[in-house]
Amino acid sequence: MDMCGLLFPRAMNQLFSGLYVMEIALIGLFLLEQDSQMQYFCWPQAVITIIPVVMSAVFQCMLNHTIGPFFMYLPCESRRTSHGIQWREQTTIVEEYTASVDSGFKHPALGVKTPTIWVPDDDLGVSQNEILHSKSKIAITDKHA
Image (cartoon, rainbow, N blue to C red; front, side, top):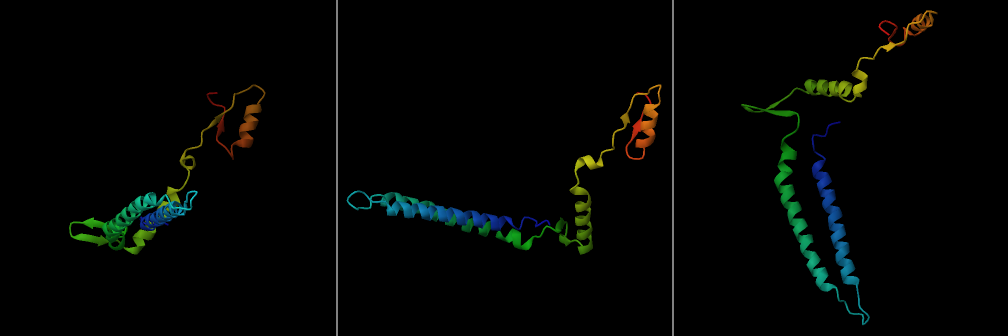
């Protein structure tokens, strides 16, 4: 089923969720590191790592704000005309989907004409016998062979 790109925002948000988990885990690892005197010595790296977390959050908000309306208000069943958006009939959409499923997902080899098998002509009639038995299943001939 064609989702018309509606899964793209979900995939992007899941990508950012994984990024946040990675960045927060990195901050946690920096804050857990101690030296031999039990002093935390990686806190500058942890503070520096907070900057990409904030930048990722800002970028995600900007991305959702920018492309969000396109996914909510412009379905793929619409097409632009000189008078704005013209909605296609539901039956047309079903017919187009059925036609694409019927022909669009077939292997290209299924639409190619089957080649003719040429067997050499002989004086004993073996080729004629083979053609007689195989003609109903495959295209076979001894002409021009």
